[in-house]
Image (cartoon, rainbow, N blue to C red; front, side):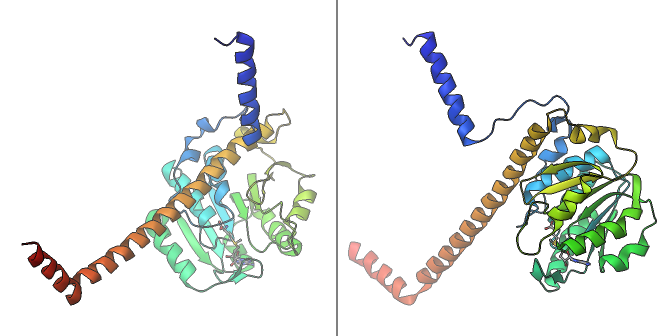
Length: 300
Ligand SMILES: C[S@@+](CC[C@H](N)C(=O)[O-])C[C@H]1O[C@@H](n2cnc3c(N)ncnc32)[C@H](O)[C@@H]1O
C-alpha cells in the first residue's frame, strides 16, 4: 500500500498537470455565473462569428443590467444581437432592442449581399419581432431616432478603425442614460488599421470598466453617473476580476465547441445522405438488378 506521503505527492502531481492543461477556476466571492443561469442557455443563433465566445457574458449582462433600451451598432449575421434578444426573451424583460447596420459590410469584415439580412430576418422576426427592430441604415442616419439619455446598453461593433470607432462613441455618448453601459468588441486586435485598442486605452482611464481578452477582446465601459449595483463586482479591484474572466472564458469556449460539434454533425449527415442516394441509384441500376437475379437463380 502506498504511504500517505506518496499519495499526497500523487495528488499534487495530478493537480500540477491539470494546471498545465488550463488555468484553475478560482472560487469568486463577489460574483457567480450561477446567479445568472441565462449564461448557460444554448444559443439559438449559432453561426461562425468572432463574437461567439462572448455569448455567455452578453446574456449574463442582460440579466445584470435589465436594460430598458438596448442598441447594437454593427450586427451582420446577428450572433451578438440574437444572444441579447434571446436573453431578453427568456428572462421576460421589457427591453426594447434595436440593431443598426447597413447590412452591406465594411472594409474590415468585407462586403456582402442581401442574403445576410434576409437570413437574419427569418430567424429574428418570428422570435423577437414583438420587442426588437432591425434598422437598415448607417449609424449616423439612425442617430435621430433615439432621444438623448435613453439608451441603457450600447454595443459598438462596426468598422474598427480608430477614427470610425471614436466617431461612433462620440456620436452615441449623449444618447446614453444615467446607468448607461457601452460594450466595445475587438479591443485586443492590433493588426492592420484596427484601432479599438487605442480608443479603449484612452477611455478606460476615464470610466469604470471591465475587460476580457479572449475572443479578440471585449470591453465594458460604465459611462453613466449611476453605476448599476450588480456591475460593481466587475469594476472593483478586489482581485476577483481574473477569476470572473476565467468563468466567462470557460463558458465561451463551450459555445465555440458547440458550434464545432453542430458543424461536424451537419457535415456527417450530408455525407450519409449522399451515400444513401448513391446506394439507391446503384440498386435501381438494371445491370445490378440482373446480376442480383442471376445470383439468386444460381443459389437455387
Ligand atoms: C464586425 S461586423 C458585426 C459583427 C456582429 N456584431 C457579430 O456578432 O458577428 C460589423 C458590421 O458593421 C456594419 N457597419 C460598419 N460600419 C457601419 C456604419 N457606419 N453604419 C452602419 N453599419 C456599419 C457592417 O455592415 C457589418 O455588418
